[in-house]
Image (cartoon, rainbow over all chains, first blue to last red; front, side, top):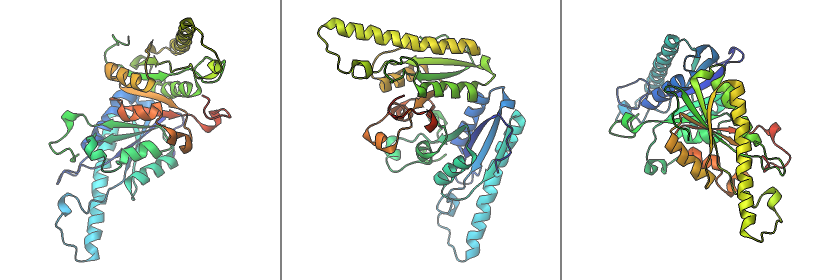
Length: 179
Length: 179
């Protein structure tokens, strides 16, 4: 995956994720914002000089949204969950690949599993993009003090230039944890 | 300064600094690397769609390089120092403005005084660039643990997307503190 890029194009890696809003398995606000920023501010009309590398690392959805309160009675329950997460990931990447096609910019998209922040950094090391663009919820200091976000981790540890595009306040839903 | 930009161009702010190497008052390695990255990887051939905003904040040079061991006997010594720092800053900006002219990309350049990390963030708030590009010495964890670097501070506090371009190991001089 993400090999065989044309020589001498700027390779922008975008880590994209699904929305955390229950029953809304499309791109999250932050990913959409990061994609829009990369296209409008960096690629602009110069589509032949760029390639977007779209990576999705499904986070553990077992304790989010629709799964809260669910009773697991057999190993098959988890298999269903995994295939559902994979389908969500494919749906997500399909959206971005279609958008790239419409815009006319080359792209590659793929899914890897694992801890998102570690997987993104490992993929960045393997792929060596010119720029890694990450969305961020721009949560308040109270939220940020609880732990390190995926984008914080990647800003510190990814071995390539990283830019974090924060969600604008007017783009945020009422619950800032939703994205 | 840095006003009146053409509408609908991507405005890239670059914080540039002079070399810390004694007797070498030109751009530091990190600033040159950041400039080169912005031109080669982002602007590319699409020069009419970008504007570079080149900011220099002279850091306190009194305790660096040529001033170590100097005896200050009157207020005029400091005036000389200030005018020398200003001349260095102008020399630095002249280099980058000339490079922009050669490349064909629009630019604006200016100097502000103050604590560099705070001044850069305040200028970013005032100017609201689409991207702030900063060079970095990519010092080891030992150095980084001593304090917060200018780029660390700006990554955390600037109210715009920030990307830090680390110096490649093969670009570094023998003393990693030199830049």
